Image (tube, rainbow, N blue to C red; front, side, top):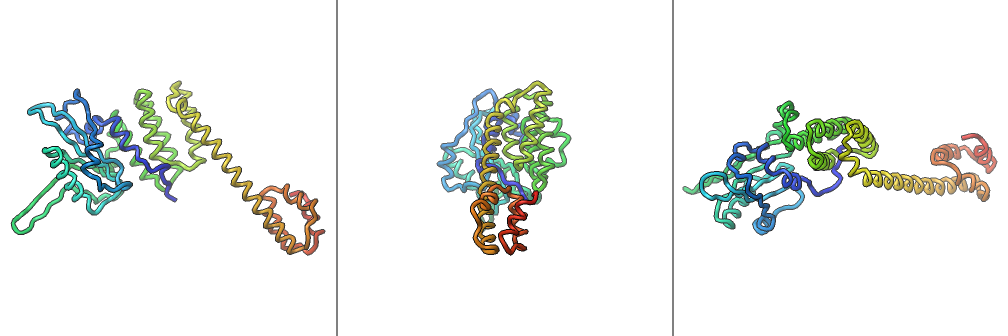
Length: 327
């Protein structure tokens, strides 16, 4: 079964804000040299909400409208509309065009429209929108990168120190292990260890781990195994970057999950006892209180065995004989 994410709020927006320059340098290397990175980066969230009040929620991972200063030429402000698209969308090209028009109308200058496609459909590659009718025509083009294309560039990803190489690797291995939790756990350990091996700072390790951890969801048992392996690795490396920060919350989560598991088991035992006592009463008649106490002391496995055995009981003595036997 495919493993769902733990939450619905995508950390794509956060990772883009934390490493926006690195994202542009990694995905759009022709654009990056045009930007004066010594000037502040301004994220235009309020303006983008005004421009796109009808934007759908939940289908896209992150929309960003960013204002940057150009390095050379006229004092031109670059408005980069960056889309991170999670799933193929029929009207994606039209939406990119409409956003560009609205941005142009709002700022009186054209944006640079960029898209990062994170979907799993290899042949979905929208790059333009246009029409021709009765002598009128329009052609709008935008720049796209497809994360699936990096599958064939794995060696380059491994060698890159750009944080977005780690982001892409985590994304690709999440897709690849969608139905194989054991392999996902192995790759998650490998990718997190890589953050240390490349000599990232503590803050970079934490930022990229949080993104990877959100993306590469594991079932509870493998989550615990992953945590123990990571903890041992950090102790060997004498770099407790992640476990020192996350351990309290993680341990609390483990304890809470264990408590919930015990509560679920106890509720199941109570239901099983009630059902079996009813079946026994129907099978052999009224059950004495001392015998009921003995039934209440049985484990869940023993109750299941009793549920099978009682079909052969005809008297209360049959029940007592069964309870007297070692289970």
